[in-house]
Length: 196
Length: 124
Image 1 (cartoon, rainbow over the protein chains, first blue to last red):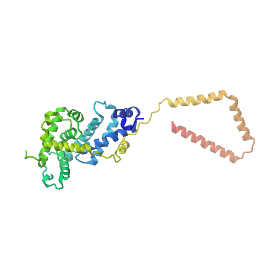
Image 2: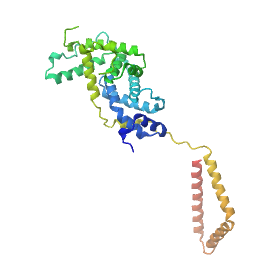
Image 3: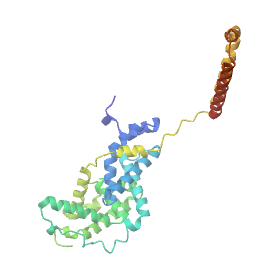
Image 4: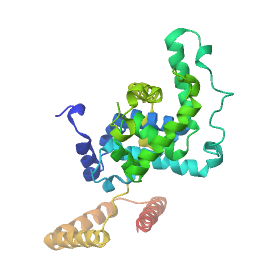
């Protein structure tokens, strides 16, 4: 009998489809739960409880729609697509809480910690930058944040990100570019060089 | 480093924002989110498996088969049925039976009949 690691995602999916094998699906969940939950934590700006709820919704939807997975993308990419759609649907419902009009107040200087104020060396600076990055990502629009997270944090190509987000590749590039410009403004205090 | 498109990130080498994002993304990918019962909660949230639907022809076919088996047995062993009936009657007639015992047997048989009928109707 093959070890669990030797069994591919495609074989597990086939078992789910042919024999309604829930053990095979549990193995798929175990394999991908970390990536999906981490992605959703990034998208929800660190709201772990909401991210886990959406991750559970993602896997239940994946189970229900497994027959429609045509293997045109990696299974993980397909999961990212479901997860992102679940998050976007949730964000649309609670737009006033999650999005708002942030174009005019992206700097959010009252909350940002200036790097010079951070003591304790490189580790403290890195930890503070991580927190500020999380806050800065939260200031982006849903589309910009999703594009940045897919391209950088999930390490997807622009084409894969376009599949996940359900939009053209050019749109993904635009969202990434605009997102980075906004992040630059929000995180300007971290710029080691002269202010742009 | 993510799969980049050159036209957007050609000047990435000296772009501090790019560096910060790449660093944050690397940390993100390196961090493993412990399962901590998540898989179990997903499996519990999956819809229950659909019950296997029995074909509609199953019940009449089964009834017919049992009836055929009973009739077949009666035709194959005609003397046995009569012998068993006679034997049972002889046993009952050979000993004195009180009115109380007869009443008890009637009550037990009646209860068994009603129970059997109720069970059969419930299953239909």
